[in-house]
Structures are given as C-alpha cells and as structure tokens.
Image 1 (cartoon, rainbow, N blue to C red):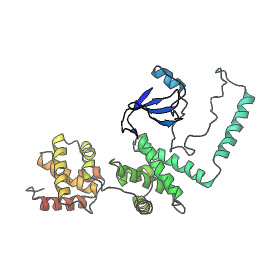
Image 2 (spheres, rainbow, N blue to C red; image 1 turned 30 degrees about the vertical axis):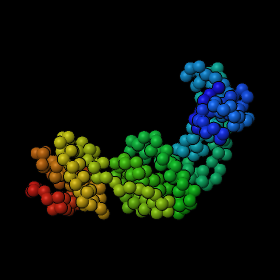
Image 3 (tube, rainbow, N blue to C red; image 1 turned 90 degrees about the vertical axis):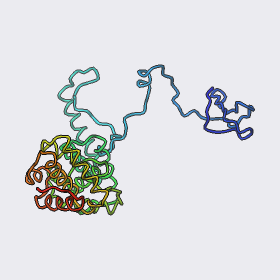
Length: 305
C-alpha cells in the first residue's frame, strides 16, 4: 500500500489516494471509491535491500554515447585474446578472431554517414582533448555535429573545419573561454575557415549563441601575464561598466579583455606592455590601443599610458 498526492478523488476531491498493488487498484482513502482498476507498476520486478544489490540486479545497460559513431549500442569483439578463464587462446583462434574483428568493423561502418561520423568524432575527440575540454562538452559537440550531418550541412565542406566550428559554438554556448586562435592551433585549420563554417552552422541550425562575456578571458590572460588578483578584479569591474554602456557590441571579446587588463595592470602598479598583453591574448597591439582609447574616453578614466 502506498499513498500518493498526484491526483484527487472525483467523488469527494480528497487527495488521500492509496495504491493497492496486490489488487491493482487506486482507492480513495476517505470515501473508499475505486478510482482506477488494473493499474501497472512501472518499477522493477525485483527488490534490493542495499546499494550493492541494486547495482547488481539493474539491467539498464550503458548510457548512450554520442562520441561513438554507433552511440555505444553495438557489441564489440575485444582484443585481449583470452578465454573466459583468462587463459591465452591459441594462435589459430587469434587469427580467426582477427578476421572476425575486421569484418565486424567493416559491416558496422557501411554507409557514408557512418564513415563520416567515424572520421569526424575521432577528430573531435582529438581537438577537444588538446583543448582540455570535459566529457560533457565533447558529448554536446558530438550531438551538434550529428544534427549538422542529419541536416545535410556537411556535403562539400571540410570535415575538420565543421568539427572545429562545432567545438567553438559549444564552448561559447557553455561559457568556456576558448578563442578562435586556440581552436585553430589545435585543429590546424585557418581561423578564417573556422569562422566561416561557424557562421554557416549558426544560420542553418538557428543556434542561440550568446555574446561572449570578455570577463571570461580575464583570469586566463592574467595568469599568463602573472598579474595579481587585484588586477583581475579591476579588469572585471572595467568590463562590467563597459557592458552596461554597450561598449562591447561589435567588438572582439578578447580585445576588450586584453585592453581592460592593460589598463588595470597600470592602475595597480603591475604595468605590462601592449606587446606582452597582445602576445598572450592573441590580438594585435593596434587592437589593444583602439580598445584602450574607447574605454578611457567612454568610462572617463584619468590615466595616461
């Protein structure tokens, strides 16, 4: 017998409902009305009295992995070449298993889409690992790439450029500070090509990609420049003021972050040169000078660098 408050009695409007699993009935605890007959128990048919028993008796299987071409839903022939007792199998049997693995792999990658996913997901894993991205971001990127394949947006385009564009889009959507320069270096694809593929995917898949907050890059750049927490805090404050006044619209977030750090380092007595900041941020000194002048003028900063 189990009480539930998900429904009310149609006769007396009481919320005191009782499930009788022996009779398969839902009964009102106030007036005794049988509300539903032949109810089904959606839970497991077994019982567990501790976490270990529950884990052993569960039969759900592994979760879906979008990073695998087959989503992890097919069986694989392992390469341990040992039997169930752990004893090494004979050379003849090893040759048989080798042929089985080879044909199993060929059969599982039969269509052009499967071949595309095999190449693309391996490249995605390589680039994402190089950038130090966690598994959940990899899964999100793999899912977005699958959507692009399903929408037939890959035809006539370089797989590696689409993969890099997908990673860049997912990083922006999840607020992870990864610049186009970093992704270009990891994927060995030109920044211009990645940007072109990113804009195409964003338009065709109608992606809701928010504007990148320049403050995301402050800690990263400040660490590379060996600036203190005071400089980081001051740079973030400058960026917040610039955002409120709409000064970052149409401006590259890395350029704004670099200029804010350049100003903040001078304010806290930890001055860094424009070249030092530009090298870390991956922008030109001209960009930093332009953003510095804009921030100084619009925010009324009394500082000469």
